[in-house]
Image 1 (cartoon, rainbow, N blue to C red):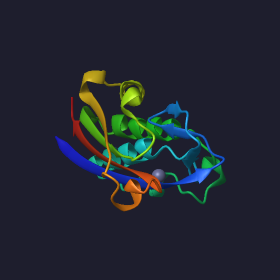
Image 2: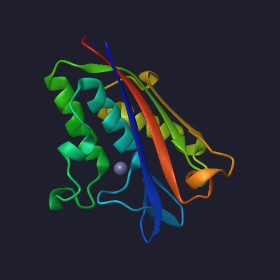
Image 3: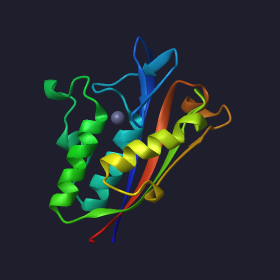
Length: 157
Ligand SMILES: [Zn+2]
C-alpha cells in the first residue's frame, strides 16, 4: 500500500462561485484560482499523486495553460484517477480535513464525499470529509481563505 498527503489553500475573492468537493455552496465569496478553485479536489489530487509518486497537480495541469482556465476541478480528479488506474492502483481510503471559518460546511460534507467517491470509483464508505475551524486564528480564522488537508491510501487490488 502507498500513502500520500495533499495540502492546498485558496484566497476568497468576490464575483466567483464557491465550489467545494464539487458542491456549489451559496456564499457571497468564491475562491480565486485559474480553475474553478475547488480547493478540496486540488488537495485530494495532490494526495493521490503523492501516493502514486507522480508529482503534483501543478505538474500535470499547469495554471499557465489556457486548457485549464475555469476548469471543473473534478475533470482533473478524474484524469488523476485514470493515471492511477493505469498504474494498477485503487483507493484504499481517503480522509479530508477542510479548514474554514465560513461558510458552515457540515451540511455539505456528505455530498462532497459522494462526489469524491464517484470520481474515485470507490465505495463512499472509503471516503471521509470533515470540516473544522481554527477558532478565529490565522488566515483561515480571519476568513481570508480556505485550506484543505487530504491523506490518501492507495492499494494494488
Ligand atoms: Zn488549488
